[in-house]
Image 1: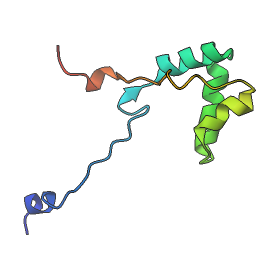
Image 2: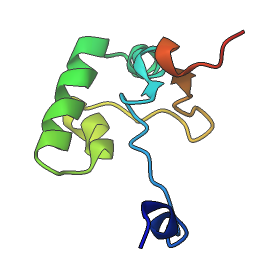
Image 3: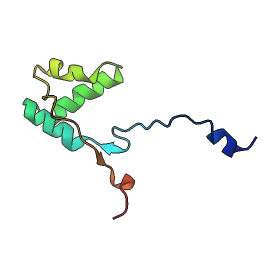
Image 4: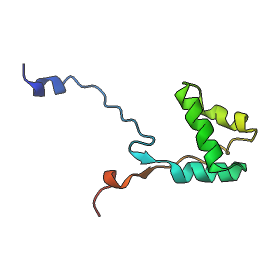
Length: 86
């Protein structure tokens, strides 16, 4: 059986988007400043929560601030290596 035949059985492809294909730095920095905490504090708490397998949304509670409003979303800035050539 050829390798090409195996590709026809593929039903889905999943990408690890955050910090792999998408640079979320500007959006998380904006969210931190809006909430009144430093980006460094937010990133530190986020990193610890993710490392422990906990919900990243708990960062706001741990920092003692309200989370950003639902209308404020983390956007998608592709890293330069993943952008289409202009």
